[in-house]
Length: 619
Image 1: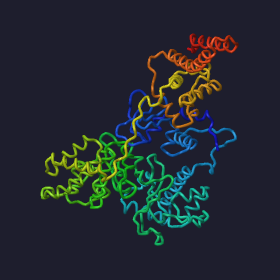
Image 2: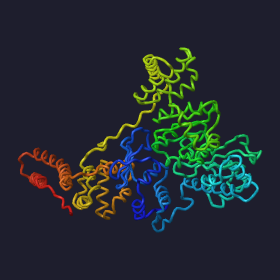
Image 3: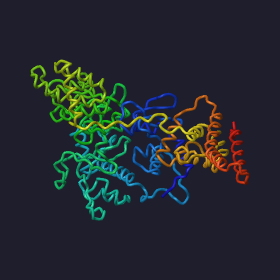
Image 4: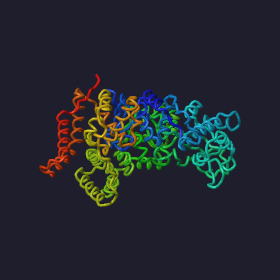
């Protein structure tokens, strides 16, 4: 396997700011100095506990304990190995990596399957794009369809790399084989049907998409991971999915539809204080929104929104405006979205059309432009008002039994909110909307919760237990490790003056301290940016990040270092001193040579304890 030079890794960490890496995934806000905070990408939370230190190059979540640097963040969030993460960052930020002599760069065979499938999708997107632009009959037809039938511009098609899957069977397969993509990547990319036992050739690879409009699907980082293919007149009759209006890529090593939202890569940078996400039903709805200037629209992959998709949005903004089609199916989908939104801690509002109009966002914005957005926002409904209107449109004519049944259905929604304050507010609002006494509604809701607790449905998964600031044992080794990470003169002094046998290497901090001091003693200290090379486990990375986040004040670091050194000396010598005293007591008054040796050893130890070593720290 190729080995990246240590100097090249240090250069990568010096040139890439961790804020720029994390901000692609997490919406970060200033938290003082060079620190930032946001919602943790590794567990669900509503109050930010994920911190990033730009000057130290580390992140740490004080909720779940995850911690590390730019490399570990990319490894965790993108599912990459160490070398793959380094290569990804180098490519993303324009840093050239150097490899150890003889190890070479990564060959086609040595690349990860995931990375190869990413590259394959880029190649396929380019292929489909060129087919869309082709100066032939089908190219002219698809461009005409895009402009005249769909009423989109060619500039929008260029911006989103809209493509066309040719009707021909083998052209894409031949192009990818010519580029030497591996058999595994061609089998697992989702773009072809290949029988398990068949060889991978252009003759055995049957394209999944033929004669269809191709919409590239990107993850939140902007990488093409899948496609949605729209049926056309050109879709051949022998297409197995000929009657399906839309065909999506299957799930692959790089694509899980429940964890992805169309256009999130662009929309996440457009949301702000007065610009929440707008959730629409389909990709073409989102494209229409974008075309008229509404840049915050996203669409789920599939027929319904999922917990994972909502948590993705919640990372960047706490509010979502749901704008589904005004037909029955669209409104049912919106109602399914509501309890999931409450569970994810999202403040949901619902954009509805006044009067009896039955339009979807695509048609609405096509006819009226961006002004229509302001119109529907003025009549937006809150969560409870939308739910009541959906379940009981004519409240005034409803009887007590109808209201009771509606209330029970609404309790299922309200119960998803994990805040007692939010629940109380929802119940007060429901009492007003249903024209029921608040006290009666609250009593019925309490009964509903008791029934739930009795097994009507399983409780929600508990949030991770918070990790306190002193979650790691505050032993002497950790104390000294902290000083080493924050003060280079102390680090060099301990590396040359602390006997390694005094360190308790049965502890995590002891192992890391011993390894760090040995490295400095033999090879010097290359800088904090090279620390990751010494960290062998996630636990060590978490410990290092924990210590690096604790910034020293005005303390006398030399004094604390000497106190730690004396503590290690006492701990090392005192067990032997107790053993010697026990042996002396068992010897009695016999004046043999062994007794005199024991007395001499005791005197030596006592003298050392009475005159502890003092570190010589360079100024």
